[in-house]
Each structure stands twice: as structure tokens, then as C-alpha cells.
Length: 217
Image (tube, rainbow, N blue to C red):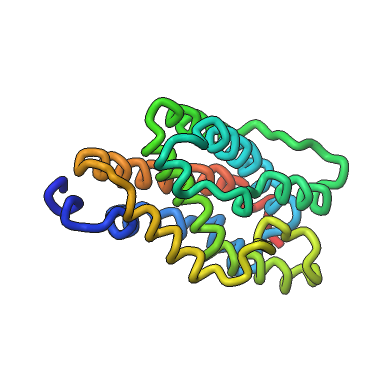
């Protein structure tokens, strides 16, 4: 594994090395129903409630590590989603709770928090979440908009106003990753952390999947 990864750019190693975990997360029952327009407002609200602490921690760690070269290379306040999640919860949940009991979300937050001691591993979580939001996340936003006839309301999470063209932005992001001066051992560790991030996402979807009957639309 080390020899293979060392021959690849960091961004390519991150993408190719985590394909199995990425596919497993994407193929969860909850995500299939969400993409199929079969999740009701409660089911989507519960998804946002689980994401909220994840992004709160992601953005907190990014601020704390902002001076580290690896984090500085990718951190961009235009990517931050916490305020957008709160705006969407105002739409979907009204004055309802902004927290939920979620072992999967808690485990995800704890894993991100642990990267404070190893900033190059934080980059794996930043990449997994934000490039996902700029990629497949855009499809989710369009499906929600169409399914619920939202006319743009309640989907601020998918609206990157300051990034009107995601592809060149993602290309630049990957180029900055590839320029990071990291060792082969660190590269392997980053790839392993991307795998862990996708596995944590899959656990979150599985937790939601246990409630599919209640979320059916």
C-alpha cells in the first residue's frame, strides 16, 4: 500500500484509496431514498441535526489550526456550512430542537476533534466533507428543491454563492493538496483518514436508515 500511494499525487491517492468506502456510504438505504425523493421533512431534518455538530467541529478545528500549512492550504471561509445548516433548520424544523441524540454523529465529531494533534489528518475530513458538498451534494440540493417545490428555500446548505463554478474550484483545491510537502508515511495516513471519514458517514446513514419507515414520503 505504501509503495502504491507514494507513486500517486495526494489528491489522487485520497480519491482512489477510498473508493470502496465512498461507494459503501453512497449506497446506503437512507441515501438511496433521499436521492429518490422518498424522504419526508422529518427524515431530512434528522439528517441536518446529525450534520450540524460535525460541521461545528470541522469549522472549529479549522480555525484553531488555521496557521498550520496543511490546513491553510485548504481552509476557506466560503466553504463553511454551519450558518447554512442553521438557516435550513429554521425552514425544516421551525423552533424545534437543534440537537439530537446520535452516537454516529458523536463518534464523527470525536474523530475530527482528534486531528487537532495531527493537522495533516484534519485535511482528510475537510476534503471528504466539502468536496463532497461541491460534488454529489449539489445533486441532493436539486432533488430536494424539485421534490418539495422549495424554490430555493431550505437548501442553503448546498448553495455556495461565492463559488459559482465548482469544477475549477475543486481543481484548484486538489492542486493545493498535491503541493503539500508531506512524506509517504503521512500520505498513507491521510488516505486512511479519508477511509475513516467515509466509514463515519456510512455509520451516520445507517443510523438514519434504522428509521426509514418513519421517514417514508
